[in-house]
Image (tube, rainbow, N blue to C red; front, top):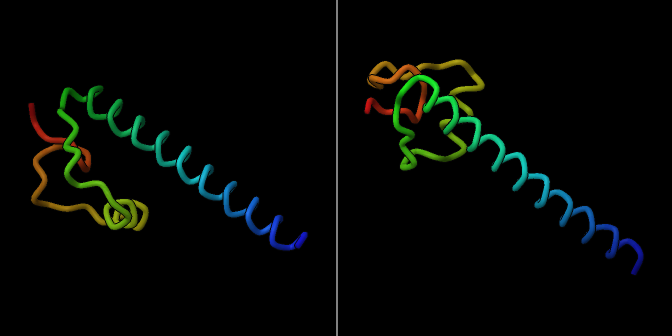
Length: 72
């Protein structure tokens, strides 16, 4: 029973941490887009854009300087 309780608490802590990190990253992206004078495009949120950014690939067809930013 003790193992189940610790598993559930670890799962809850992981979910809460994921939510907090995701929220902070979203606010950072919106703020970064506003800083360059672009509008944040909310249609392209997901793990694959994040993975591409972490790997360092840049999409050439985007007109904005940053991913998920579109020209105003």
